[in-house]
Length: 331
Image 1 (cartoon, rainbow, N blue to C red):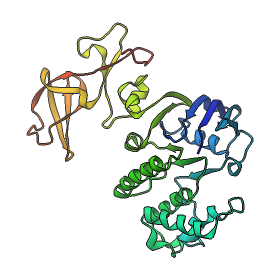
Image 2 (image 1 turned 90 degrees about the vertical axis):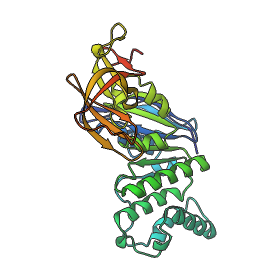
Image 3 (image 1 turned 90 degrees about the horizontal axis):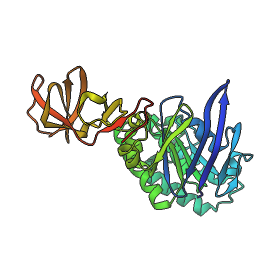
Image 4 (image 1 turned 120 degrees about the vertical axis):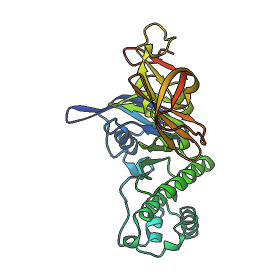
């Protein structure tokens, strides 16, 4: 595995910058997740690292070695994409073996069998090893795609929303498995997703992209609790952070235009009156959808609350985030 560094990488498509001077250090052994909406530059960053696309300017380094002019094979990367990348005429076993049978690797047969069997067991597809890829369900096909990457020992794993096509339970199971694999193997992994839960539960570092620029990079906790901007604040948090005018509550610092309140930081019991619009029971917690003056807000409360639509509660902010006119956080 290797540390991967992007140094002011720029890439333009049709006259529009997909990446605009992105500098990013992916530490050796880290699990880095890129977040951002469609068009933010997440997949383009992945393709720059993989060697599938070449930057217009800037450099890329693996373990201190420039790789800008190297092919994906020369860079020794393993990739998993949202679309299934299987050979339909081959069995699951043959698909998993394929990356290991490269003449460049010269992997002994016993090692191939051991890695294939261990990967298949981990991904819960051992019973499908002798089945043709065309007979698999969508979820099984994606597990095989992930397995094709995991059987290898590349310099970096690159994954572009690999769990998005799976059902909720399998997605949750594989989140845990991928994190365990990365943690125990020391693998370096760059992962693209729009799923905030995946980012928060799996990442050691999160990179927030906006219109081709890296706006924040740090631990999930840092990005969640100390977003550098209003935009970064909205990329993490479920439900979405409450954004209000800065003068909605007293105490705003000079220059503040808006205030951001996470749902758990909008306390009820004291303060100003709000009306319960809807009560959303989620098992381990309950969300209150409130109307406060002209604002719609969401807060969390006891899972066994007896509040109902139309009730009046009193709310007050806790740990507010303030943002200026330029959208940057003040405190």
